[in-house]
Image 1 (cartoon, rainbow, N blue to C red):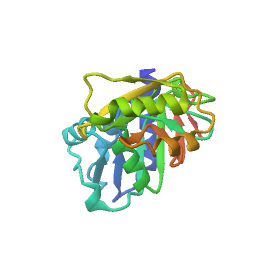
Image 2 (tube, helix red, strand yellow; image 1 turned 90 degrees about the vertical axis):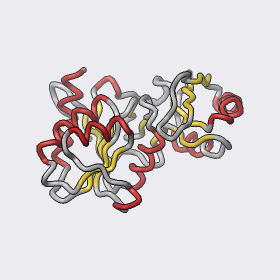
Image 3 (cartoon, rainbow, N blue to C red; image 1 turned 30 degrees about the vertical axis):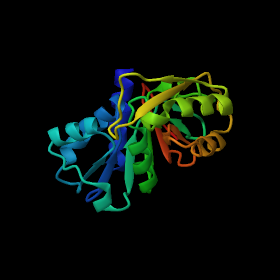
Image 4 (tube, rainbow, N blue to C red; image 1 turned 90 degrees about the horizontal axis):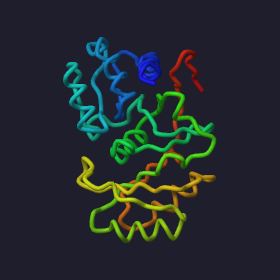
Length: 215
């Protein structure tokens, strides 16, 4: 799948325009996008990054990393996904950067999602749903998620987000109505962010592979 990821990342360069501040996500597929963005570093105004990992890679290529508070709305955000359904709704957060990813996606006029074919599903939920939680609320949130969804929350021990929080991965879900589930989970006290990108889905999905698909 490495080649498929690279092809998807390189295809997304077509959406980058001169003078842009580009929103950049996190993960192995995004790493290929960052590498492809490097030759354009003198043509763009900089990047807003969703993680320290991506920020380090961007700076390594000589691309200036800017703060979203200073840039205002962004024209473009490019990120990967752990799952993508036919309606461009996503599960994200395998890399524990879901909150910052969701913030940048909301701030962006166009969200381009880059994936390999293995990430495409008919119904979201095969990949465990990441949920970022305030540490003191971990057990409370887990009980509420179990009660509301029937899914099994598992603490991702040893992982702390860039925001200083913890992650629960919810197993055993079949998410028929992602928007409703996202809205419901957002109401549980202690949840910082839910790895469902349904209210703000992708605008364009690029699927890498021998035959690149864009939808």
